[in-house]
Amino acid sequence: MTGRAVVSEFVMAPGTGKAIELLAGQILRIEQVDGGQCVDFNCFNLHDYKEFMHCGRTRTVHGFHPTTGTFMWSAPPRERAMLYILADTVGRNDVLFPRCSAYLYESAYGFAVHTNCHDIQAEAQREYGLTPDDVHDSFNLFMCTGVDKDGHASMTRQTTKPGDYVDLLALMDVLAVPNVCGADVMRTSNFSLKPIKLTVLTATAADLARVPDVPRLASQRTPRDFRNPTIKVDRQLRRDPAYKPEFPNTPIRITELPVPLSEDEMAMLAAVKRADIYGSDDAAALRDILFSWWEERFLQGHAGAPSIEHK
Amino acid sequence: MADAVVTLRLNQQQLELMDRTIAQGVAADRVSLVRLALREYAAARKADAGGEPSR
Image 1 (cartoon, rainbow over the protein chains, first blue to last red):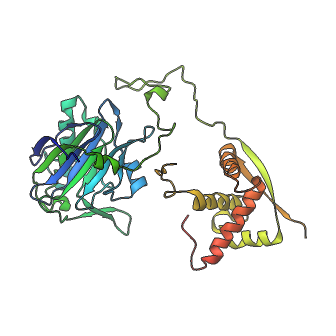
Image 2 (image 1 turned 135 degrees about the horizontal axis):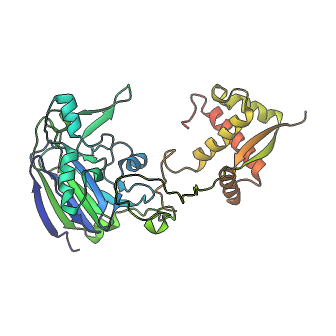
Image 3 (image 1 turned 90 degrees about the vertical axis):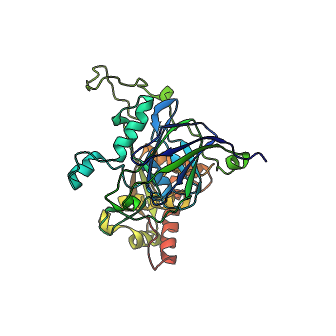
């Protein structure tokens, strides 16, 4: 079997990031040099920057700490698997926190200027003509986070060691933008900034074979499907006087469905209905039961999360 | 005793999901599907009397 070949190597100095063209079938290894360093990560479709990795969609599918065997998804309406996490020697990543920003360091710590992931991302992707407004919420590699009892996202120190790495396999051509997280006055990277090694490798057939099949559906739309496929090039918003709304499946039409229920079935309804929500409205309670039952019986993923099981 | 009648108000999307489920052979028609859902939903909670499954 042919092994992986090294395409390029690069070491990101503390306070910096790097935009890298990562082609489908290539692996980006993001590796600890000294250990204990968080890496913020974004990516774009290399041929259409409007398709970008979306932490919100990714966390609904894979939870708050995606690791080996999960995907990074692009934002709706694209919703495609962009990258596959092929390996992760630590297994603790974060998609709860947004990138840190200059505002954070000025407002909370009093810095006029401070390394921060938003500005580092912006500077790295400027090499490809993108603006600071084109930075999106980052997938935070090696970042150790959780949720407090009061519902706030929290972070703590990490235990990564030199040589720990995450391997990201590109499923499409992307511009990958990792950066050394700029947080040295919080726990994210154990209160210091360290270099991070980047290696681009060609995937082997065995690597590619490890990627689970995912659905390819009509709802994964591209600009060819958009009513307005043109990227707006000025900043002012102006109403289109010719606009006519075309919301899907509207108007919503209501149909009444009379359902005869036996005495036993009425007793079942009384026993399980959510009277705390619906009160005496048995019709609403029974509709809730119908679709709650449907989710329990037929949904493959968590409620509210897209299915990635191949059908 | 005559059956009671509960009249559901359903939109076209909800009906579509019901009809696709019926087309899989789960139930004979919309009314049967609702009654099946009620029976199975209630049975699951009776079997799991310690707590309601998450929903």
